[in-house]
Image 1: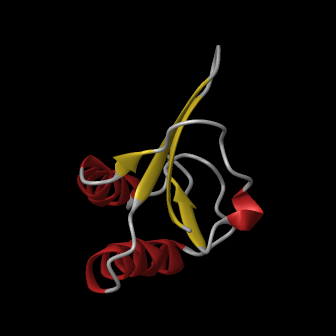
Image 2 (image 1 turned 90 degrees about the vertical axis):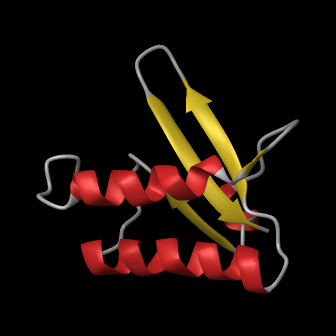
Image 3 (image 1 turned 180 degrees about the vertical axis):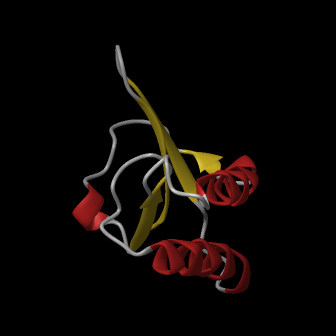
Length: 88
């Protein structure tokens, strides 16, 4: 989601609340196309705002109802930081 979008702070709050319960991924980072469902905090997810909120709900439901682990990858580069939440 565009960080300048009027709903970004709402999205960021909901994303971070979900990320608090996610298990940090250890080891080599998996390729995005190997993840069943994933969502980035700051990256361009290629979705509408409503779809990004719906995907947050999907991640929460899949990790809770289907006993699938919700994973997180923290990305830190010299000038860029992001969090990716995903289920495999």
